[in-house]
Length: 158
Length: 158
Image 1: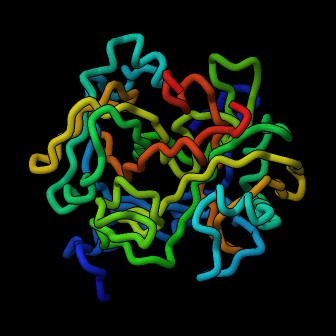
Image 2 (image 1 turned 180 degrees about the horizontal axis):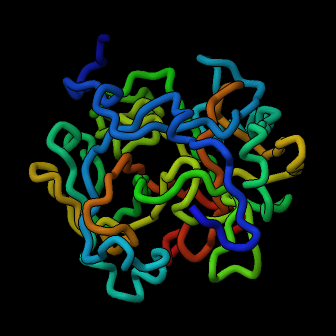
């Protein structure tokens, strides 16, 4: 695959170096399609959020117990349609090439993305969780949901 | 494996349902040992941080370019020494059983943990990144580093 000026590839494929596997606990549903997604959550919210919701698979639904509407949660999702071997990238919005770990690009060795979203409605029986927004395209595999915790999830000086 | 009162297991092993694999980009080094770790970052900071640092493997080191000392970063790490099939848990500190997705316990279907830490020193050549604290035991596989971004990583009302 070709790289833009200043970009660097690993020379190894992280997928071939895997030491453990991830399972889908469900999927993110949205109005977005591959190749036509907002760039981040701020842009997604500016476009109405994308009718975002989670569909949690049956065995995993009891895991929602204790989450309440109104709460902020982290979503960890797998953006696995991208290459994983780009370690320096030159995104169109940046002023030059930057290391992948200095960027939130979904192009990364382990394409696990992080999104902070607000629960607007939740039903354990159906596994449906309505959220305020997502930048994920419809059907994106969901790996994890975690509560946002104010004492550890923000810089003490924020 | 036995479960405490009120705990529920999945009946399936998420490891056996994996659809993709994760690679280690390096390791978290610390003063903590398995079974003798602080419960979270707040507790880790109260105990001096744990001499925490990252060792990034050689191919991944250019990915650090653009990260600066003083910056807050997310660490995604693999706490893979725990069971993955507990979907309702009764932690000692909670007032009753709760869904795994309402908890930050490392016992979860995909044991990817999330830690917000401050970079105190960084050297791309050696791949050494000193951080202010970790609750991970020495040698924990590191999956990803991401910059903390104020416009998307905190609730708008915080």
